[in-house]
Image (cartoon, rainbow, N blue to C red; front, top):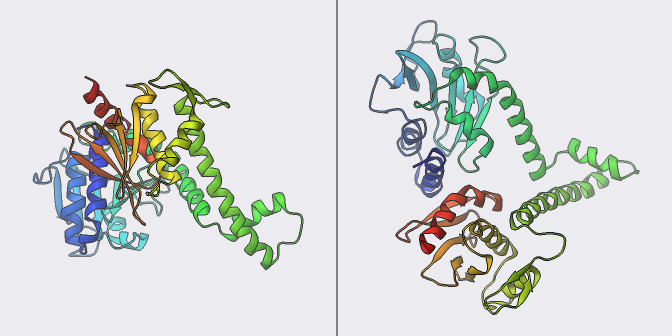
Length: 365
């Protein structure tokens, strides 16, 4: 299993078991130890590689321990402090990390609740852990751009110098991206005032603030949706005019007509626009292996199916978008066993592109 696949598998495990994990020890056993073992590649049962309840009393308070220390060549390289998964991470939780960072050779410290992993180093002052992480891994929404940096911390290709040299850029780019995401989700007054001043010449009163807070939030969400649609159109090779697709009877139809037929189909079911957009992404991925007209869809009460040749025995993927909170994409293995992976947006379907293509290849080989 490739690194990215192991990461996705752990993310799925976290999504499936989140509600059952209520304590710090359960979080360690279910989420964090598998992360150290399957993602970073260290043997959690080998004390020469992973030391649980690590203690270094020199210059720090007595009887305090860091949950895990990852060792290489007899030296501490990574310190890991754990909190329970139901508890959001705060810098106040990292008191042991701050103290132990200065008295060990560790250059990387990790604060985690099993779902979010905050990685710290000493950019601001030598041997003093920074207040802000340089890398944040959220298993609920994996940022593809940080995966190569995370891979550098694995046992197989451990490259500390490369990670630290890239840490400053990662720290600020990541922080800016998270700030932008937060503003798009819930814009604050400064963000609203900035865009209001660009389009509105009146005074920024309380009524204006209330009005434009809603407008800025709406515009931001529409902007993101349009970017997703643009990416989809690019993947499909669409131009400004609808692309004609040859169907089995030899007649040409446009993509607009196909979309209309999708909406008309199974009228007793509620087929949403989001499901159709997800279907088009899966279809675009599959088109590297088969002609577009061979990729069909069927809606059901509990899921939206993407099929090869409109055949229930040839499922390519399933979109589980009916839940109010978490969405999932179902991926099939060679034996047609479905594994469900949580996704927070349509873009994350692309994370499973390789698996989707392998499923299609299995049907046509």
